[in-house]
Amino acid sequence: MTLTRLSLVEIRGRFEVLAREGGAPALRRLRAALRGDPRAGARAVAEACSRVLDQRQRERRRVRRLFALRRRLHRAGLRLVAGVDEVGVGPLAGPVVAAAVVLPERVELPGLDDSKRLSRAARERLDTAIRAQALGVGVGVVEPAEIDRINIYRASLEAMRLAVRALPHSPDHLVVDARTVPGVPMPQTPLPGADRSDGSVAAASIVAKVYRDALLRRLDGAYPGYDLARNKGYPTAQHVAALRALGPSPVHRRSFAPVAALLEA
Image 1 (cartoon, rainbow, N blue to C red):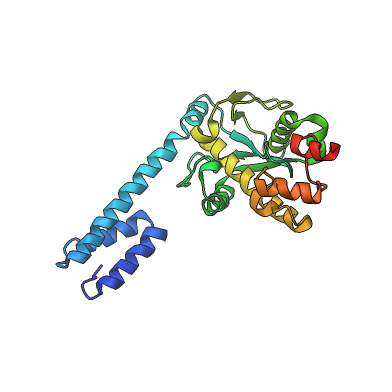
Image 2: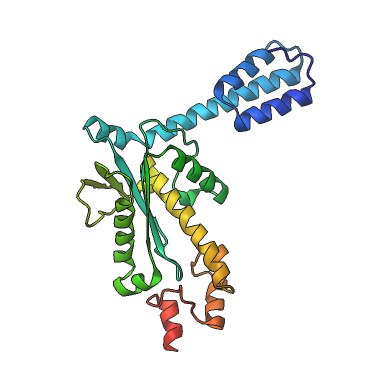
């Protein structure tokens, strides 16, 4: 690659595109082409290429560590390992949603983490990547009326059961965030903090969160005034004030204390 005829602005522009979208081979070629450039600015870009490559390598190692349990399960002969997680236990409105995700042995998911640690943009990018690479994705939804009938703990377990049942192929093993999914035949590993420490569960947490957030944005259009698109049904001060002014909507959980108190008043 001959870059000596390009200006430093053009070289930096090329680097920024590769740092954002390019693969490691392209960055290495750019670095190699710039290392002999007599311009200090060009050599600085070569050093920036090295930093990006090092950062990506560290990230690959971090993500690989998230799949340590799955590798042990694979060595034991369990091929289809599903991570299972739920979101939406605490809100005053909307359903509880769970996801089950079976990922292939090799994944490319830089930035994979517990959904609560990620920005909306990062979650949505990862949701797209997870769905593109996954061997199976299942989603389970339990609506507010059912939450009121059976309680939120049992509803969250039911959402997880539905998510596992929605997978296109029955998994050999489940890894679940600190709980055991009822009513399914396969063995399970309940792992406290799994949404932060296990890659399959982290992927499930992202899918469930993105799915539920999209549902709440639609519910905001159907039931305006509560700002569900922004608060996602959680009891923010503005949401509670809207509840007092407007009363509960059909998607509010009537068994939850702040809503129940208004109904009893």
